[in-house]
Structures are given as C-alpha cells and as structure tokens.
Image 1: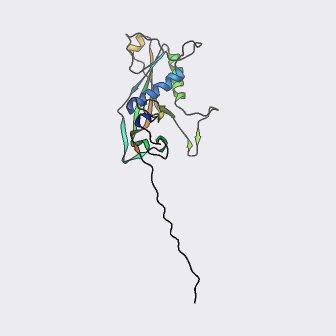
Image 2 (image 1 turned 90 degrees about the horizontal axis):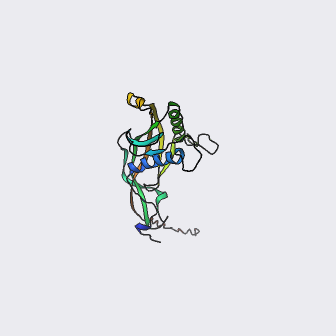
Image 3 (image 1 turned 135 degrees about the vertical axis):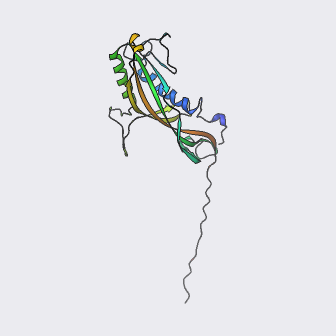
Amino acid sequence: MQITLEQYSRKAATDLENGIARAVRAAIEGALVQPPGEAPRLAFSRVFDTWASYEQDFVAPAACVVPAGALQFVESYSTPCLLEETWEPQGEPGFGLYAVAAAEQEIDVLVRAGSDVERNLLVRALEGLFFEKTAEGALLHLPAGARYGRVLTMDDYYQLPVRTSLREVAKGDNEESAQRSAWEARVGLRVQAKEVVLGVVQPFTVTIQAEVVEEFPSTT
C-alpha cells in the first residue's frame, strides 16, 4: 500500500550536527542527572547546550555538550545508498533514507563541580557511560571482536544511530575557576554518523525467463 510522505515514521527535527549533540546530551541526562523526587546521589543538576557563565545562576555540578571541531564529511558516496531498514513499507513503493556521506566530529563534555572529589567521580561516570556493556556488565563482544564505544540513537535526526567513543580526558583548573571554587574537566568524544536524504523508494522488478529444451531420442 502506497503511503504519503506525512505517514513516513522517521522524522528529522534538526540537522545532523545538532542531532548528534542532542543524542549525547540525552544520554548524559538519562544516566547522570538527578531526577526530581529521588534520593540524593552524585549527579549533574543540569546539562547545558551552551555553557553557563560564572555569573549565571546554576547549581553545581553541571555539564555542557559543545562541539570541539567542525562536522567533517570523511567519505561521500557518488551514488546515494538506501538504508534498507528505513524503507517503508518494506518491499512496496514508499520512502526511505539514502546515505550520502559518512561524517565524523569531535565533541567535548565540559564538567563543572564543587570539589575535586566530586569532579573526579563524575568524570569516571562519564567514561563508563560511553562504553557499550552487556547486561552482565562486560564489554560487548561481537564476531569481529570487542567493540569500543557506545551507539546512541538520534531521536531528532530520523532515529538513526551515532557511534560515540572516548577521545581524551583533561582537567581544566585555572586561576579563575580556583577563585570561584569551581573544579572543571573536559571529556572529549569522537562521534561517527551518516548524512542522509529522504527519498522515494521503488521495489525492484525482476523478470525471470525460463528456457525449456526438449531432447528427443536419436532415431539412428
């Protein structure tokens, strides 16, 4: 059954770069932000998308997700490639997403805490957040070997996956932060995803011709 573009289930509320940042921020908020009403625990009070200045009111510890570099298109495809899992309805005329390039970017998660101990514990928690683990807690092993990093879903960019991996960790102590009793750190990530376009998909039509050769017994 033919569907309309409005009926296609995958939506994009933003571009790829913002979709990546929102997915990383959502992962941190889901695991390391203190939900209202729960017993107090070590967690971020808030995850910003633009870093709050010292003069702004916010409760430490807090985090911020910011790009550390431009979104790089490391490989482009001369012929857009259909992502089969995005074809709707499967096997019938409809719509799907075509990959046009592979993209990479470096992202920083900035941490600001109220003490050195608090900062170190939160950095350790962030490091653990970006390892893919099984239910038993061990690193996920695939046929090709252990996978480093974690795959997130970009809810605001066609619900596509983005692979994240740790790049570096650095403490950011300086004179200004010391005077304000703000202990800072930077957790660097490398992310990889696909730039896509939404397009029409037509099922392939295959025609099979059978040739029958009759053999007759020899009369000689």
